[in-house]
Length: 187
Image (cartoon, rainbow, N blue to C red; front, side, top):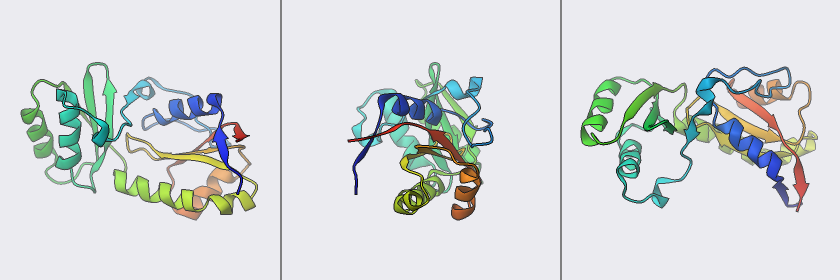
């Protein structure tokens, strides 16, 4: 199997696209139509194991432990505040309050997410396992990333083919897949 790497332009485009939040529109080929003001948040993608002991980093680790796996989506930054993306479940307000009380020095905001991280990871893993299948269909999948805000999964492909977004959504039975096109350069 040929090793592939993503060109710098494609990688930058993909990272920008994964910083989007819920509510982005897509064109006919499934590509994002462009960022909205809510899509300019900086996402924290570093795993908590690599974080230090600053108040923000402690809060992020605490948030990962506080919210149930069926409700936690991720954390982003909006100005000075950390934004906790979580699915509203029973007693989520109590969890929010507890987190805020344990970390009074960190400005916090809470935003409802559409999907928990576990669901997004499952869909992402399924797509990654199917990369050989998509190659037989004439599409090279370069990267797959769950959105931290819980809005869906972003898939970077070498080319968008009419109907590809619909085919992927049907295959994975997941309506919140977005495609981004990027140049894939052989290694």
